[in-house]
Length: 200
Image (cartoon, rainbow, N blue to C red):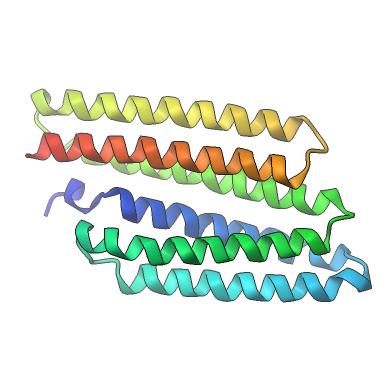
């Protein structure tokens, strides 16, 4: 089976979210010890909840890895609920650590790096799969990959700019991450659609 048949927007969506969850949990676990005793308990509870949600999300991905695209489309709504739960649990952590901007700056940086890696891994996977097409079909696919690369550069520039601005509020940082995620989803979807057209 050709590699491009295993590429679809839903699995890339799930992988990018899972990578971001992993990066968030790891970064916060490394910082929770810096919190005061008053806030540490609430923060630890939030991390525990984030871990559980992430593990449930990972389990869904692992159990459904072989689903076709239509089945993934149905599953995505449940996984979007898991993602929202994770975001709510992260907000609880941020609220507990509200007096320490460095805590949420660390989480932001970890999440931004995870997003950047997700963009690059998707680009690499699509580049490799594009090589399987004949020259006449490859042009459309390469054009979509070029657009994905362009969107990735724009997202990285924006995330870097927000990070360099310094002491941003969590809501400003969170908004920048959300916009980057939306750009990834849209660009990835367009690239995958180009692959489908080229494969038909």
